[in-house]
Length: 424
Image 1 (cartoon, rainbow, N blue to C red):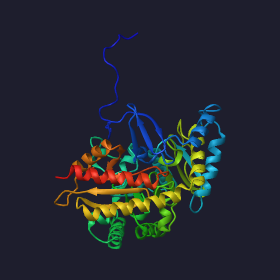
Image 2 (image 1 turned 60 degrees about the horizontal axis):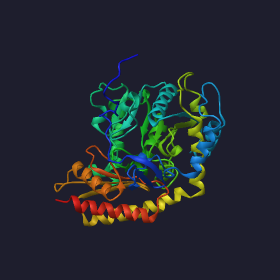
Image 3 (image 1 turned 135 degrees about the vertical axis):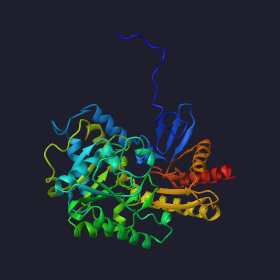
Image 4 (image 1 turned 90 degrees about the vertical axis):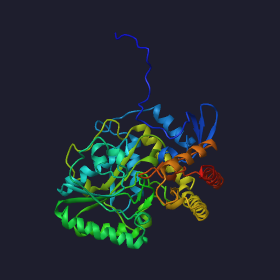
């Protein structure tokens, strides 16, 4: 027996927390702190609690499943929630996607999709896009360029990843059309100079970038990727970990761009807070993967799958995709109105209930310090927000899909007041 220690264990100091709240419980769009304070949660656990905190239908499904089977390891056996979830997801998928691999985290699903692409095509290289975020495990991290801090101190990254420009029109200062055309021309140049099509397995892209600042790729760009993937016998992989499941006002963000992927990745809002991720491909494509290349101890957990089935029911029964479109339009209009009167808001971008407001200083440069102070002021007013962007300059709006008009108004009013309180 080891000797007793005076010290007590604590959470790693490298894990930073954006607020000072210690949560006691959650109810719908609200977090209740251990001191009884009530906070309007516009983070949704980074887009995870799509149906709100502790939705009664999701809670009941999880409780019922816990009482019958908690863990049915899917390399050993099948369980009913897993099979039913695959069936239900198949009804929501674009094109011929009808086969699914389940994991616990988005990064696992991204890595599994990358493995399938390499095996199915026999090509080594993945072409990703500047500002993308696909996870923190080494394969996914090697495809991630949203912030230098994520990769700092762990170089070199995995080989076979080529980074191409992403159509961030606010950054380039051009129209959406000019930016898309430029990025497609640069992509063609990359295919001619860095990664020839015969060595390029797939384009791997977020239809709306998350960590980079809620930037839509846009129809012109995504359709250009689809055309090039077809022409060069490559795959098009869409990472909808954050943008999917109704978040942008359509069930999948790419529906607004009128194109279809070969592989679609989902997580976050999939199971209303239970750890679950998945990627889907057609039977023909999935069968080209190598035996033994997919697995994991906790993937497709029975309780998480039961919660995911209940989540789909809630989304349909309560019209949450439609609500995301309606409340997202209200949110966008309020934020754009604020931008007209406050020059520190450099940009408003995103779709549906996935909006970002970039804060800039008097010279027009990203102002992450100001954004941090704004979040502190909003917390004092009982509204929880988070930041993103390479300099932490973007205040992101990520309420649950159940959010009401009154809650949107309250959060924007708090943001407006926080801007006043932090102005120089």
